[in-house]
Length: 195
Image (cartoon, rainbow, N blue to C red; front, top):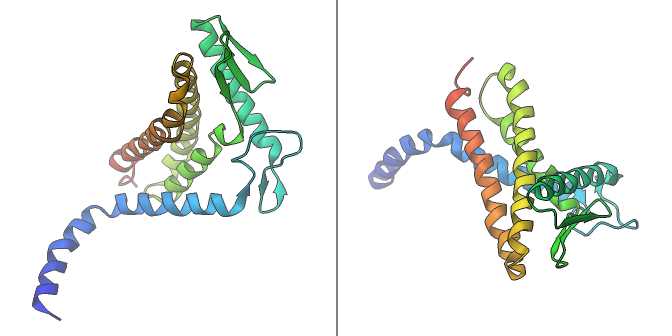
């Protein structure tokens, strides 16, 4: 083998070894996202009585409908506590007196992020006895973070309607994944090596 190449490999290998869990996190995140996109259809569109969400062809619309309505009602109750001028219509449209608001569609349910988080933990190193409580706790935290995310977006667009695309498609979306990563870091540093 070329001595230069051997030298590079000997310098890079320990670094890759040290970061193998992070690399595994990234790989599982990307693969689980791809699996979601290949198996779930219809979750990105707006809700209507004629649309369906399917998993490998099977209708899973009721689960997405239930979850998006749960998120919408939770956001409504939290925001209404602080601002009585907020309303809810059709169990998924939250709006202010000025008409500005959020329509909580199936892709807002948080189910995709819960799936990705579950996949990441299932493929991470660590004892199953801890995964049995850590995964459900993480799913609950994903739900709470999603509700807070949508609540924050809704509050911010009341007076800044034009901010919606940047808040929804970029800032809060990636913040959500950052929080999933930080929760995984807790797993990796506190539980992954315990057998």
